[in-house]
Length: 471
Image 1: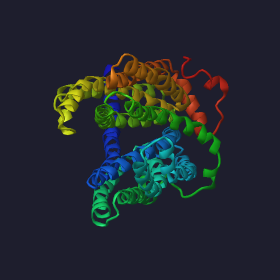
Image 2: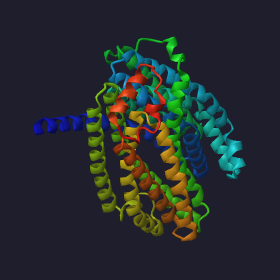
Image 3: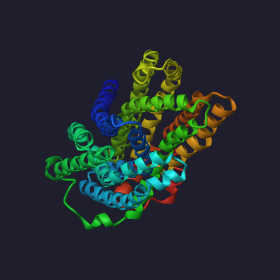
Image 4: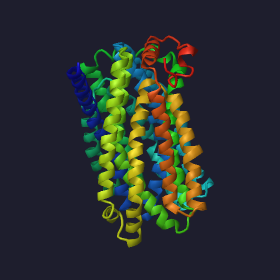
């Protein structure tokens, strides 16, 4: 019996690592598109770089993160349908998600078209606002591609088809570098050339993924062509997709707020520079648990959809174990490189010393974020997005942000205080998500998944108070 259990654990570890590795690569390659764009724009001067940076941040806050969050509803819907072997429904969920996200993108595009006026209204310098407005306007086509791409990626991920996603993302990243060289450096288009290159790259990725879905034998069961059923049950999709978006946005908006608060600190140039380095480092480190989070979401949703609660429990335990191992490795690396890391970003001694002092705090926050990322993945796979939105609201806006402001401005801890507030938010997140996960009745979750897959309304007695109540 013990040997069988060990074999099951080893098999689950293999399955999750098989998913996590390529998904980590996809996340990193997708992230690299914006980085490559800004690198090319940076050679045009300070004003184009500032405008493109502000526009990219504005686009992420108002559009990209929103669409990524809404597409995460497919973690639950497609993942559980695939586990239940209702393959045709996986394709219907994909079409419904693309329709809804494309509709939402129209309204986001209107906001992006008004970027200049919005930035001026919040007292951004006029030259930067004008530059950002142009960049955001030319970025609008990428918005529609991004929403469709996120749906396609989730569609494939929940069916455990990850290597085509990785290959497509790698090809597009290489193409994007060439496009930026042509449109930014050679064509004379300037910063808007980078935005155009972004749009082309995203649409090429959509085309590659769509062709794969259309012609690959791996998707022949889940893709049966366009269906009118995709226009049905849209309210049910929104019940999951809106909380999914809030789960992600409530977290990412906090970091944008930290940047704004930095400007109010003494010596804002130094504080903003160091915070920018910390955010960049944190973003790179986050890519590893991001892969584990997606793998956990897929495994849990598949097993719940298949009606295997014990297998779902095993997937949860393995995912958390892997998160702990990876988190410890990240902490060790950050501690080891703390004295040299700042040199990669600046030659100023004051900045380098400040980054060195921040690295232990950054290591702790990355460790905690890795655990909560996996717990959030488990929540998405189980369909707990509404609960997750409440957890993130409480963690960041009732604990994190107030703590950051008190530590930074009352106790005069400056940038360290801002980041320690984020650490407190992560601690609360881990405690709440951990409590919910431990107290979950996985048999009930499997029953709820069966009802969800078969379009049966989940009764209040099953959903109310669950998953925080045991059976």
